[in-house]
Image (cartoon, rainbow, N blue to C red; front, side, top):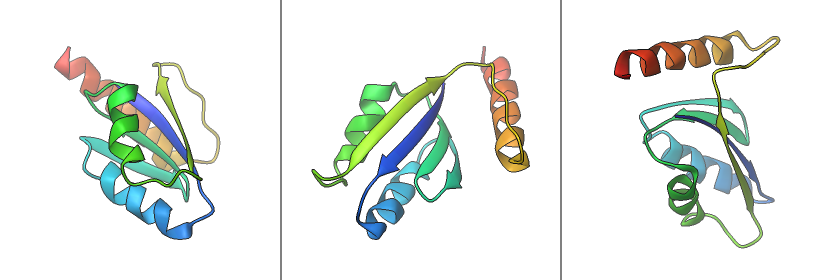
Length: 93
């Protein structure tokens, strides 16, 4: 499953800490400083649990499961990543 993860934090080092954890998932790409796309077998609640362990109470986290429909402009690497993940999911199915 593909997820969009958005972290809001006033602490710049929290973005790096979350990034390190996200890199441990099956497939991940960083969209910008506070946004990632990941592909993993885990559901959103498990992802939240993993990431909240390294967040502060002043941070907020949004996790959205993505479906196969998407539209992207001016982000070729993200578009390629999502297309690769669609193919990856078809192979696993």
